[in-house]
Length: 167
Image 1 (cartoon, helix red, strand yellow):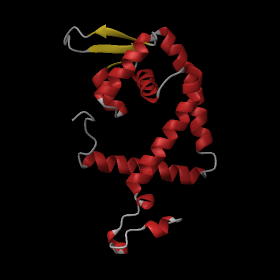
Image 2 (spheres, helix red, strand yellow):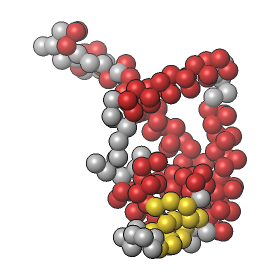
Image 3 (cartoon, one colour):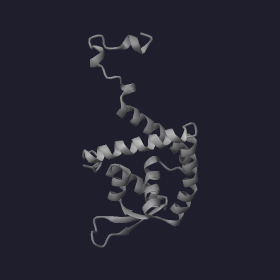
Image 4 (tube, one colour):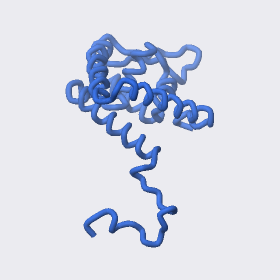
């Protein structure tokens, strides 16, 4: 069998088949993965930072100080992923912990001066990446895309699908 059309399930009728390539959730997932991997090449090669590590730095860059749980909720990462990435960032002295005196089970995380310096170098690169990614999209189409993405996020939030990734 040389083509995909020859590999189709002969038992199923067209209405019973879900073509993954046209399925919106699949397409969004593939797009998100491709974009993350492409951006990761930009900062990963230069700074040796993984996707989860970048998301933590980006979150701390936006909010200054957060707990690992708050970072996980904001960045949609599982607590194990956050924990491993935080440990790697701490080992490289890019993130530091400060005990939470009200709850000793958790700590506040913040970028160190070294982490802030790397973050400050990555931000313009990330912004340029986003600009380059959208360069062939007309401004009105980009506005429509942003509006539609907002609607999809709002729909998931309203349906309760926007919940704790660790739940």
